[in-house]
Image (tube, rainbow, N blue to C red; front, side, top):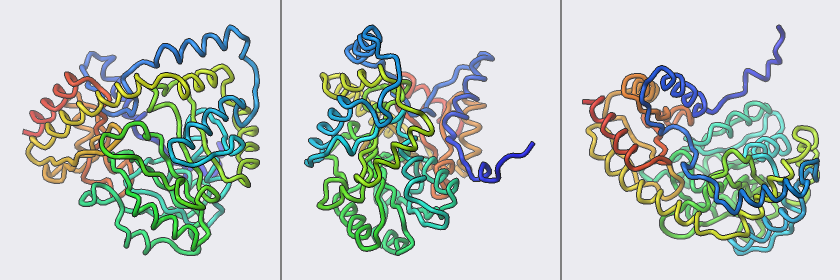
Length: 385
């Protein structure tokens, strides 16, 4: 059977493959501690669920506007703008079923065959996957552990050039929890202007920062005209299954992104968008409580990993991932992650699944209870000993 050759260029997200393998083991009676999937282990807040139920009762069950319903676009513009100290026109906002369509549609719109795209490595695997899929040239920007998993400015300046069409940023960062500073963002902004490149800034972990303030390249003067701001509700509001994300685009791109929505998804679930309004405009106490619990768990997992011979781990500044250096164990990342699951009952992710510069690391999500985190640490320690 014929398969289009471009499908060979399409990658995947390993977390879902490991989750499926872990579920298979559990079905056979194996006790597995899940530290592989990037999903908050909290329920969606009641007022958000009630808003969706009310919308269903009000008959919000049909098609709606392809870029999102106006009340949600207005709420997003107000919230995203106030958080970054800028004014955002709601007409720049496009809503999608999750953040991934924003990545996909952005790359489809601004990257042509042979265009270069700079992206963080290690990094969210869908970036590289989509660059390859459209025929672009993926240019990895190494995130360095000694810089708390920020990039080196000289490294970046050595990569950007007039062939660069898009620069992808992710802060706070998956899989490392690293956070970019204003200095790095200013360097990227200056280079984007000089080389006439777009910037896609993925800020889906905006609400999960433990120390200091969030810095966004979107806030820098003039950058709203060449920046795509990516955010969503999955991580901040424990709404992964709701599939709600959005992009804030330069005005010339909105028409094209909307047309891609029409061609691929028609629109985002109508009633779910009212839940999104409730999440964004309603009480934020549950978000703050969730972040506080993640911070407590961060201390437990980082201290525990650093106590295991052969493993070191930097303290992440945001998100809910520990990116542990396992080079001292003598194991390859893929082998260790596989055997930790199959032989120790601990599901983690191979660092190399996030790119070539992830070799020598494993990612552990601490979106799990302290009890389970401590159980996993004990199993890892015993396995390596």
